[in-house]
Length: 217
Image 1 (tube, rainbow, N blue to C red):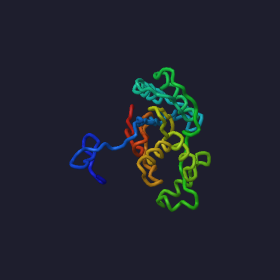
Image 2 (cartoon, one colour; image 1 turned 120 degrees about the vertical axis):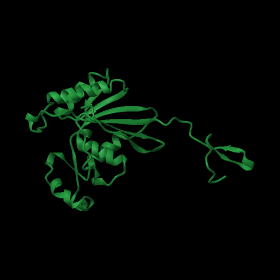
Image 3 (cartoon, rainbow, N blue to C red; image 1 turned 90 degrees about the vertical axis):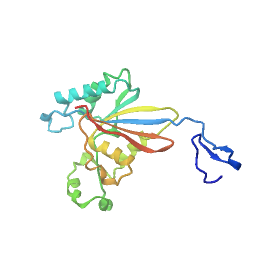
Image 4 (tube, rainbow, N blue to C red; image 1 turned 30 degrees about the vertical axis):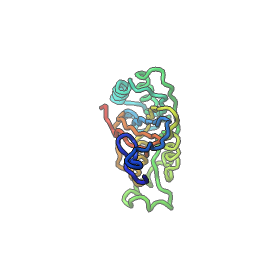
């Protein structure tokens, strides 16, 4: 019986062809589905300052996204503390009913950069650009982003949808993680403002990418 192929009923051939049931876990395979959204377009006049809010176009993007997600049963909305993400969350939440939402440091704006000992993990052509990342955005060896993935990418005994309104490189890191790509490969995964990326964990398989950069613009 060892090594027998599963048939369509989830059984393996036994003695004289009689099927033998395969032991299995009767517990449901609950999923955690993260809906990752880059904030709406920032007001160009703010020159990318942390306190810079949304442009009129960014507000419209957030409204469209809220309508797009209005039938999804979210357990919570977690948004970056920065103004452009907080304003996006306010506009989206107006379409979702009484969903708890809060500012969350796990999804604030961060850029993974290699420590001196890990610079060889990144292509040399990117190192000078990474060296110029502002100090308050630097996440050495992605320590904070790894913690964010561990925090959100967990399952329990119930299905759960979570909405994370965050920033480009944060989403790129989550996508890189679920695809098990090289650490530097978040570079080049560019997201549109208010575009939707969905990743999922469950207890029966590795995490997976469901949707990438589904734009509402």
